[in-house]
Length: 202
Image (cartoon, rainbow, N blue to C red; front, side):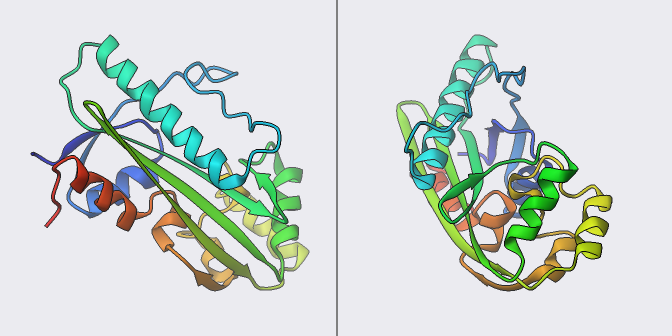
């Protein structure tokens, strides 16, 4: 099978990571009206973080299948993913504003938080999903550097209000898990799922 697939995400980081492993992603945007047209990202009452990201990745992949069929596109594998950050069992999504982003960064200061990314590959009747969980320790942050980081603009449109591949890399004292999973697409799990549908990367 060739190495082209539909990416049911508008994340430039996921596009970049797929290209890194030789995949040619074709953007398959889902409707993003508010509330989201294709996928409701609201957590269910009492839903565990791992189940939350798994459910959303599956929902996005199914929405991608529907979009591919509805738009009359050539049949290809569809990849979808979802990332969330948790601290003390609380889900932290994308910041709603500068104050929200600052509160998240203060909460990480000198502590360990978890980043969970679920990835799903759908093709034909096959629907595979894997979840990557990573523990990230931030060093103690000062208020001035929190505000300076927010001013870089990197906090926007990122789960947990930071990007490990950007300026926030200097905050990270320790990482246990997947660097690319924290970026938003764990490549080990992605490669395993692609092999299941006949896409061999090497």
